[in-house]
Image 1 (cartoon, helix red, strand yellow):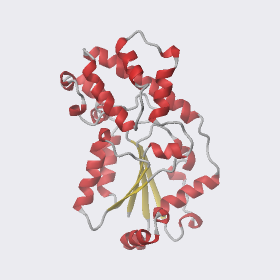
Image 2 (cartoon, rainbow, N blue to C red):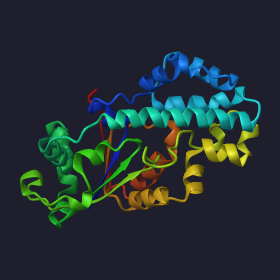
Image 3 (cartoon, rainbow, N blue to C red):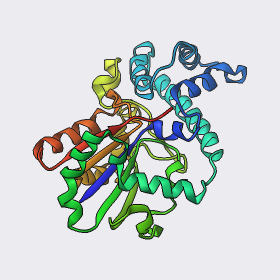
Image 4 (cartoon, rainbow, N blue to C red):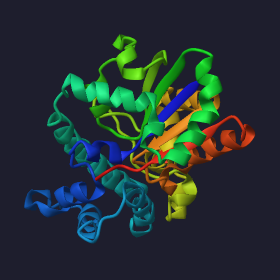
Length: 282
């Protein structure tokens, strides 16, 4: 059996990291030192002073903002400014997150091995019954797809290959820990992905046919251009996953390709696959 956890910003917020869209917008728009001579950049920062929403809404607004920018060169400057400052801000938050105590690691691994423990009794029984046959066959493989730029998960549980089977944590289950994938890349990489899901979400229709803008703003295009292969590896994992556990995700339109991919394979094996959502406690 393969269980894949998909982690959103709610995961980091649960550990006290100030990585919400509201936190970043406040940082990006409030400081006098951030006043820019570029009219397009400053207009975007001024717009951020309004009520910030979810990250997915923020990315969709970035697609809409293209209608206010005249040329691809100007839009490139806007994108570089916001992605550079976003990476700097998230890096500062990630550096403040310290490695957790072993007790936190053990608790997280216990939750990973048995997400049904957080359900009410009826739902818990249904879920346990659904994959009891899988578990009786032996080992269960756990993987993680993170939509965060931080390395908080790695700081808690370390390298997956180094995790040893602990019957005190996962009971009779023999877990195999596979991989952690970051679909938007991490602060340790040269580029992080921020933008929309498809060219149709870029309001300035002229920019849709401009490769330089389409590659920057459309995250699937950027992943293909960077050739890291993380997108393909995630899609391959989704194809063979028996149970999806979504934690702290908003399921926004700016990442719709991932939700559509999951839905597609859930429908193919409707009696064998399942997806559950666990809200972050923030």
